[in-house]
Image (tube, rainbow, N blue to C red; front, side):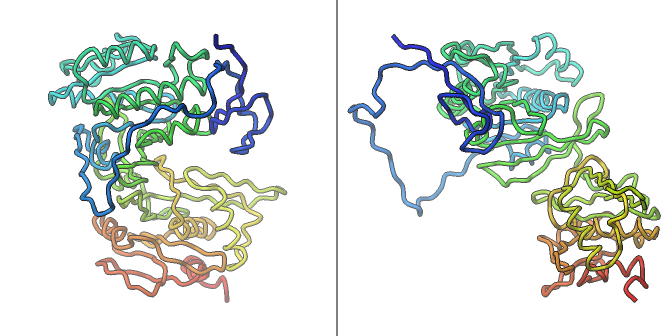
Length: 456
């Protein structure tokens, strides 16, 4: 008879320890070890002498089989996935509570069901009546979508095996499921890992698309073991600020497409509506005559996006000036401020600095350095950016500027929205575009646009 023994599992990386300790030796995180019950049998540690099957091997020049795609009918959702759903794939979707994960999945499945695809939606957090009420609000009442309210993994798999395998299955959410052969509470590391493994195995075996909703921690990471993100084929994060109506669906891992692709949605009373031209909406309230504002020509995956960067610089007598950042990396802002102080002599060390990316978008690429610097200097000098001008480029610690990837696509997007001028880094390779370009070699040249006599 198997006996029960205690083990401690790291909720971040899934490492198992025989006793509790404050720090995980494998991932270095503190206070992530959770106690779980594990059964230990008398089976040997090594593999048995039973012979396995021979694996079919292929050469590198074997023609690959193109993965077919299932279009959901929600264009921005398909774009983030790399062109649609791939049969047999497992997709993990995470995001803050109330951000719209269940809404976008219900919309996508409703459209698929209306096209004749067999789809099942399992909810472990809401009753069937609640899902039906949401579907009515989204205008999907007539969609032949099958709903289920269940948290038992065994019952879900039995239901799926009782008939023809469905095209798409949604599990909302993985933290609410429990496997009755595992002696631990739902949401624990072991339960999440076991349930995810069984669901992914079913998807691979039957060719069903498995869409799994995952909760996130206060740091914005998928709750549960980190191995969960390695097990699935695609990881999508639903981002957005509750103060804005925009929602960003970002792909951070995709085995069937490019990473960092985004889909943009707008939250309305009738659900999430697609935003086919996000640049136009992000700049809808832009005032080019206001100091402290710069339009950044960015790139999200393969999509160029124009967004407004706002800065406020105010003199202060406090010993420790404030640095508040929304939508950008605070460490990157500290570097840009240091370069402006050291290479242009602006004296920003005695100023409070506030930086915001308008529209709730989060920017991570270094090409935003010059746009941030322009907004900071514009606010400090109380001089607005030149009219109808976009800016992008990276700033090095030496004060030199560096080019950005796919500059032509950025300028093409700016031209489409009516911008006539671009401030770009000076590089060896010329950029072909209809927009008039002003090349900047050093950060001091950028400062001279707003403060001509700064370095005299």
